[in-house]
Image 1 (cartoon, one colour):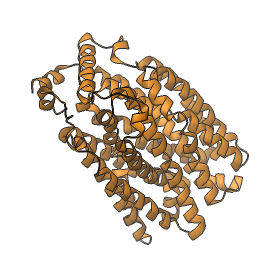
Image 2 (spheres, one colour; image 1 turned 135 degrees about the horizontal axis):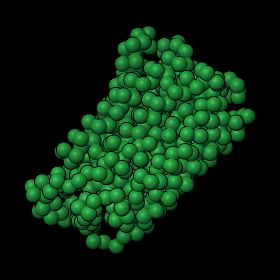
Image 3 (spheres, one colour; image 1 turned 90 degrees about the horizontal axis):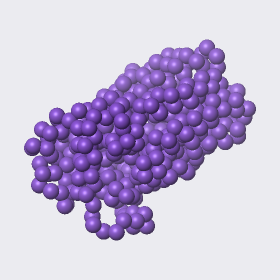
Image 4 (cartoon, helix red, strand yellow; image 1 turned 45 degrees about the horizontal axis):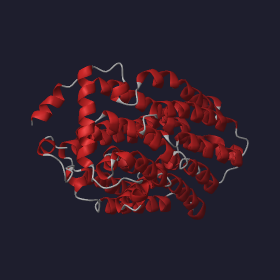
Length: 436
């Protein structure tokens, strides 16, 4: 218990520098990919002659491009180059986001969405690796959870702002304005962050020494002592279980995020400005869910349980929202329930890689998991769009999304015992006392 008391005395300046910068950057990253849903509901489909199936394809093709820099992003960050890599990425995805506002047809939009995905692809794994260098295992779910709050925050901001921009100037300006703001974020990112505690001149010696020693201790505790290689990583069944869990979760997340404005418009028959306001409550609920599950996970160290519960809760609420089409506010209440579980597992989920894989390949593992898992972000929006075209309703698509979430739930429950305790097999007694 002495280690716990020591941890409480350590200064916490890192929480006020690293987390806010990461959140701000990813808010606009997420905004630039999800404002497409508001453009669909705000007249883009009619102006460009886009069918529901093609709209779903254009929304989802982002995730094909998203594959390309996942592994490089995680690997570069593990080697200490996250700050520069993310700065370049910010400028690139801001430019491509703006360019979407100038698309003349669906094919130009698809190319730009693909390039936007390429530009954004390495940012998420790079930030997660950076966070793992700044926050030890006993803090990591909370740190990841606070970072993950950028996702509902982005959607809360995107809803009313995008609705207002579209109502005032049209759908093209939502891409142009939000993309331009993104580029300016480099001025916030660059002076705020450092790749590792060793490089941070703004950090106190006490906090720096503690973090360097604690992270090194943690990495040694989770080492298996066996040779490290990406070839061995690829053969690890736990890597593929995590890919399945994350894929199934992303199917639900992006199917929900991309089509929520359309679902709400169909449900309430309201205008785009009011639809933007109605999207706020599910994402306020999402912020609560993210924080609560992150705190519970760090308190009990049962990463597996607090990843599985949100998947099941999301599936149940999403399914029930379709059963009350004629009772608008009951259906909307279940959509708010979806929000509670929408991203609640993400902060907890990303504690798995450093727990299950050696530090030398954990960054690359994050990239592989995020790359393949985020293909669910292609499948989710596309399957809903296809179902709208085929059956004339989003409900069938929601059933598919709910089934995917349940598959993720079942797979999460099969993860190794270490993910229920957070205690490595070779952990020292002092590490066990601190809950690491």
